[in-house]
Image (cartoon, rainbow, N blue to C red; front, top):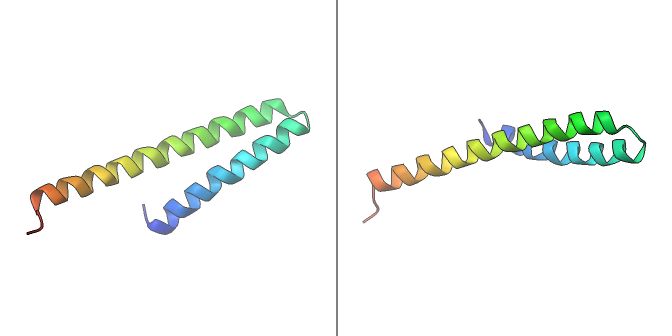
Length: 67
C-alpha cells in the first residue's frame, strides 16, 4: 500500500464515521449499521497493514543494526 493509499484509507474511515452519524440522525439505522461495519472493517485492515509495516521495520533494524 502506498502512503497516498494509506492516507486515503484513514480519510475514508473518518468520512464513513460522519456518514454513519448523519444516517443515525435521519433514522436510517440499517444503512448506518452497514456503513459502521464497513468503517470497522476498513479500520481493521489499516491497523493490520500498519502493524505488519512496523514488524517489518523492526526486523530490518534487527538484521542491519546501526553502529
